[in-house]
Amino acid sequence: MKEEPLSFEELQLFNRRDLIIRSVLTVPFAAIVWRLWNLQVKNGKTYKELSKGNRIRLKSLAAPRGIVYDRNGVIVAKNIPSYILNLVREDVPDIDEVLTKISLSLQIPIELLRRNLQSQLKTARFVPIQIHKDLTLRQIALIETYQEQFPGISIEVMPRRYYPLLSTGAHVFGYMSEITKAQLKKLPENKIKSAKIIGQEGIEAVYNEHLIGTDGGMQVEVNNAGREIRTYPGQIDPKPGNDIILSIDSVLQRQIEKIMGKRRGAVIVMSPNTGEVLAMVSLPAFDPNEFSQGLSVKRWRELRNDPGHVLNNKCIQGIYSPGSTFKMVTAAAALESGIVSPDTEIKCDGFIRLKRTKMHCWKRSGHGYLNVVQAIEHSCNVFFYKVAMEMGIEKIKEYANRFGLGSPSGVDLLSELSGVVPDREWKLKRYKQEWQKGETPNVAIGQGYLSVTPIQLISYINAIANGGFFVKPRIVKQYIDNESLTKIGKLEPGLNLLETKIEKREIDIKPETLDLLRQGMERNVQGEKGTGRRARSGLVAVAGKTGTTEVISSKTRDKILKEQGEVAEKFQNHAWFTAFAPVEDPMISMVVMVEHGSSGSNSAAIARQIIDYYFTNIESVPKSPLENLPLKTEELGNNT
Image (cartoon, rainbow, N blue to C red; front, side):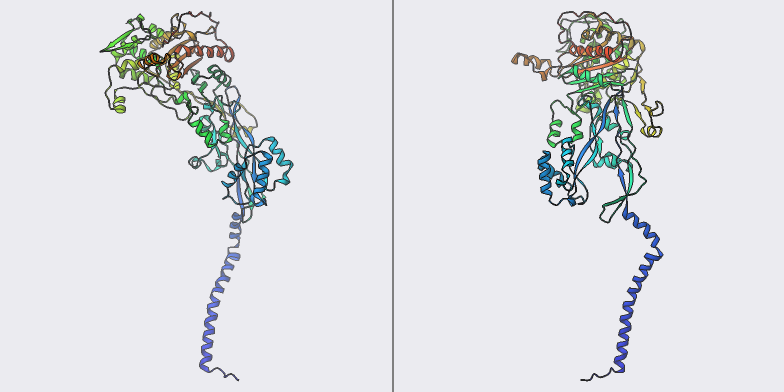
């Protein structure tokens, strides 16, 4: 059948529709062509440069952490290689099979390998995942020898913090563990790679800023999946962190720990003139290498819940009543206030009476008449009871504060506690109760609400020893500027060694008052009946003061003795002794605090061993040795 030709009207309609369709198609095609021209011709150079940002990446390189030395150059914290076992999932045909081989060959629990792998599954398949760390040399040899049996497995070397002295000095040096999110936010961009593991306590934490190195970097080319293709020249080398030199003498530190044995407590040895801490012992201690290797949750809980408070640095966090070591404060307040003079004598009958209450001296028969020097020598409670009642608690607090008690010492460690020097205002605020008259004499002999830390106590003794200056304790003596060291290629004293400053202030106490306190402390050790005579050395003259702190009241103690016949160790008194030597020109000061040590005289005996060791092995005796005066064979008793 022959088709009829289009009419004129139909032809016009067809042409209009054809024009509309062509126009609709032409506009977007024209836009596409214009866009291609704009991208490739007009802005081609710009986009070519921008595209490099999608292919070129800056890869950060970690810097080694600074090394920590003791005052004699002994390394106490350093970096050692840790061999990491990595797995790349993309290169492993059968992950379960490979993990089983690794477990059997290297004697690693397969549950541990799977758990480490599972925790990192969000990582891209081509990125190495750490499945185990701290491989032994035998494990490394097995992997390297039979590499074809372990597809996708590789070994990477990473630095790990190591403490050669193990538990010695652990509370001072601190430990390291993985950085927290909060800590990460505070770090500058150029230190993030170098600080995945960061100091969390001790010197490692306080001096993180100096110890953390500066990241290096290199340019690498990656494909669209992020895989590295090649490396570009022009690498920026990482800069190691600054090395630190401590004031600690690690040999002395270790010897003190040996002398203390299994006792719990704290010992500090210092230079009273510079504030340098020569030894800081807190017992029991821990091994900081456990943290570097990675603690299990179970082990962390054991340390946190340890009954001996193993993680606490008792030198700065142990809060104890100072006992009779506080009596020099009371004596200073009485002398400075005019309550007593050097010649004033006060009679001790063995007790004082407050209404219906008797407050006893440690010597129940009494000491008779004593002046202030003799009162310190014999540690007479009644003498200090009586002057305290006349002075009042505010005056005692004032002079305690002058000696630095009641405030942190400022030592360069974290979490130092303040202790308490009470007064009327403090008790009202703390307990909503008025101060009682009988509480003042208790504070005067270092009991009651009064509490101090060992670092505060030795700082107060330093002020007596050095002639009236509170010297801020310091543990870091110097640090080495490794950036300058890199430039000059060797260590040049004065160019790289940066010294920490000695910070001191006068305590506003008359020289003659301090001289009387020193006389009392000297006689406490050197005197025939001084309570600290067990600290007497045959090498140097020692000035010191014993202190005994009640853990339970006398009434409770008597009740336990009556019912059980003996008092358990956990109820025994804490034992203090603090000293400086030589008396004429003090080179060292110390505080010894033994938890449940029964009597201050026991701590004095420990102090003597430390003093003799120091002047035999650390420093030479400044003057001719003294005669080794024999001790009386009488019972020393539980004197204060």
